[in-house]
Length: 326
Image: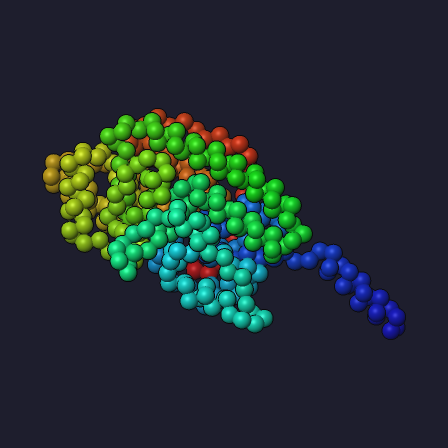
């Protein structure tokens, strides 16, 4: 009986070591999770805390979110203060001891010289919306690949291969966006949105970006901010403004009404995805799909000529499993 018991124990150990559980990567936003998922494939379970339509600037973690963070083998966040109200929970995962987790702030792996900054003096801070310059997001992918390889050295070859494929895809996307924006008449290359999330997009692709609110949605726009934007739109005869999927429409509607009161009709050019992806299972539920959607919406509304994006390296991207608050 003792011999049989030892044999059973030995067989059980062999089975577990031959098919170990996948490591879990817990990500704060869907945008970060999409990047990790494209690079990790099936070797890593990827979980996103925030779902579609959630504003990361205002998101407050629940006890369930903290437990989800604790369940991760590694944690990926955007950083650069995007998840301002989650920072204590994220930093808490770095504690010493057995419960410590590797925390990677993806946006902060990008060369600091390439970052935009908002504010003045002591309040000046880096703009966290780095993913809107596709070339910068590709740079961040290199750092994510390195971290996945450290987490799972046996999968290093897989991560490198997937990284090369995804880098090629993002390179093609970056070039395509430039071509699309260039079709907009120069005098119409002005993008007006709810909050200042598109600075990197404007710099990379040749658009002037105007917004009602600043880089963070944590502070509301004042009457003077709205009036100043109205005067700019009316003076330049800007034809369209845009809503954002994760930001209330109230401030943009106030701008539209202000323009109307001054005799200039400005229409809604469409809804853009800024700080969150669309619903899982849709094209806009992926980073590439969001960039394509936003570009198509902007080009069409501002009088450009849109042509479809043809990817060079299709990458399967199953939906992100969401945790925590809806």
